[in-house]
Length: 366
Image 1 (cartoon, rainbow, N blue to C red):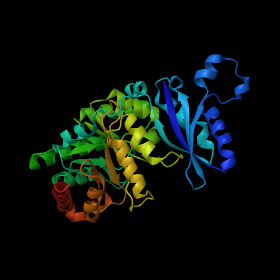
Image 2: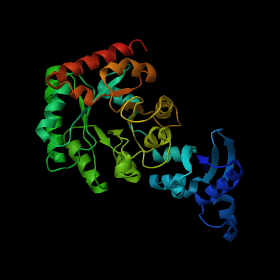
Image 3: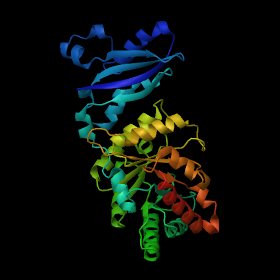
Image 4: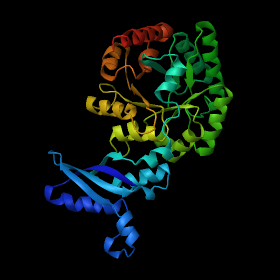
């Protein structure tokens, strides 16, 4: 089995063939090929340069074939083989990858996917809605009050701000118990349970302990930042808890030169993300409409046995952009508005209700 890694190399036309060969060697055997005596290594392990395409802007799209055996079925090693040493080259970006069916089967992808998230929200067709409790520094009781008010407004999902961890001012276990109770209390009034998703953080042992706390509170949806906790830890937690839905946060996703559609849309999904949060164009971050469209497509497009993940555009979104966002992304989308709703202060529940109503109404026209 072979993996195809696709890179963008910025260089002069006369240098691209040499740089492509060096890249193939660097990402496979990382030594002079002439020093290799093994026929197996030469035939199977050494990277092979495929198509080189001139992008017309001083860069070239280069395909490199790598042995799938070098991955060993491990998430961190896949990242290493795709872009380990070469991430240190300032003129190289990892743009895409094509993986053989065996690897897709071994990593598993989303456990719930779009269908599972729709089941949780009792929403078979419309766009899903999500909000965030923040800021850091509030005690557990304050965050629980926000959860309650969001849930009274009928929001589908309420997630922790990704900066919430196990801080002294809001310890994880205390916060999760309080917010889960708030969501249940609101459900007594509305007849419908808003899913609260606590933010997981720490090492693998801590992540497992936090999942256990969440399970004890009857929760089935979690927030996690794969690049912060580490790809191997994220994949392990997702694989161990296939009945839980994971909302993947993009924090630290811009720290390496990996194209966002590949990292957030494709690889986060591969390793178990059911929903992928990313900065929508025109918000606080610099993603273009083309990047956002490609990322959403990567999350949802059919891919072997893997369930589709739902794209979650976010990052400074407001209610007045809802129609534009749903026209752009379609109904298989979870729209996340955090600060834009919290700015309503005393009218938080009413503003949330307006968000929910508009999302449902606009979905009917898609």
